[in-house]
Image (cartoon, rainbow, N blue to C red; front, side):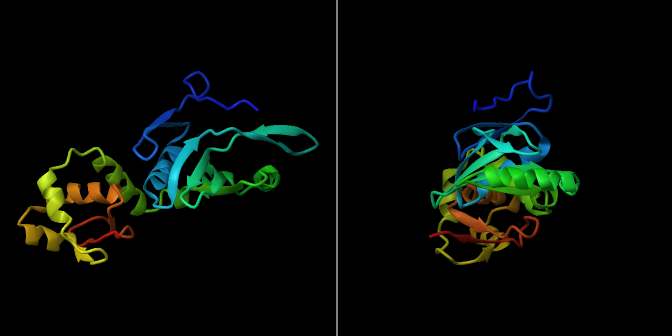
Amino acid sequence: MKKRSLTKSTCKNIHKFASSKNDSTVIVESGLEFDACFHFEFSNNVKFFESQPLGFEYYYLNKWRRYTPDFLVHFTDNTKRYFEVKPLNKTLSPEFQSKFNAIQRQSNEIQLELITEPVIRKLPLIQNLKLLHKYSELEPNTMIMEKIRWLKPGEKVSIMHISRTLCMELYTIIPHILKLVGMHQFNIEMSKPFSGESKIWRLL
């Protein structure tokens, strides 16, 4: 089966995601798929990911049909998983569920998982992920980065504490902290909006 290629002629809503993890631009065909990229990009468990991977055929309603997953994600434990991205309201009909079950049965050794809008766009997680992506392109001040790295591995402190310790304003230090988080050198609380109260800790 030929791999599907997204172009302006095949899709009206092309989105381009700049991925440092992949060292490439990931092309997707919806805003929801674009937002899913932020989760893959900053998951410590994901090695790399690809959109519109080579698909496969499945049998449904007495006919063989073609299916292309939205993503193939390669994990750090060397496993792989297909992902189908859909708005929740499009997954509730018996017809969709019957069809998707048929596709899952045919996906062979690679598991196919459905992820929907409430998971992908959960707040404030998606906003935080987008901030990490924004500051991943930051040209850092080396001196500031080195000063932040004085934290001992595993020691949790607030961004405000670091700001006061280094005698730097929050607006100066937060972009550098998010840059380090995006580089997987530090971790940060993701369940609340980023602020001076957010706790960060250095990874081993």
